[in-house]
View 1 (cartoon, rainbow, N blue to C red):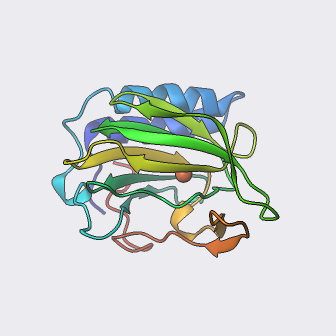
View 2: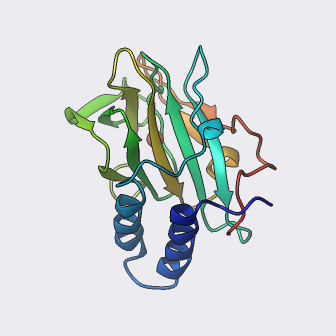
Length: 190
Ligand code: FE2
């Protein structure tokens, strides 16, 4: 398998080390902030937008299934539905900017916004997950350019059953998949 670019190789090693220690998610968030502090390592093939919808590429899947790393690519005007993750995760903005709005939702009533929508710029990292707030909607904050973020999750996220929460209420099952397929991660561990 193709070796990862050096900054990503280092991040993969840092995630592995962090998962063996207490406070792993804070350590991983700090490592992700270092990874997205520079924007010179992601091959263009994994930063290509789809004309109709956002998409994510699987950059690395831990062979033991403990985590996955993806690039999330937004074309102009593209947004996620309101969705959950079901596992811990961290989102780091590499390029452009993203709007993020947290919600409370249980399916019985329309989802309710929590706090104000905020904007994440390159280098910013946000945690998601059942312990810190797991439901949100994210969109490209740039009207005429592509935005890219790097995400790490505590499972192979593209295969993980989760949920979207329609604006009128209710819950729909959701599996995100990958633009490059679940069995073809871009990079090994380096
Ligand atoms: Fe999300």
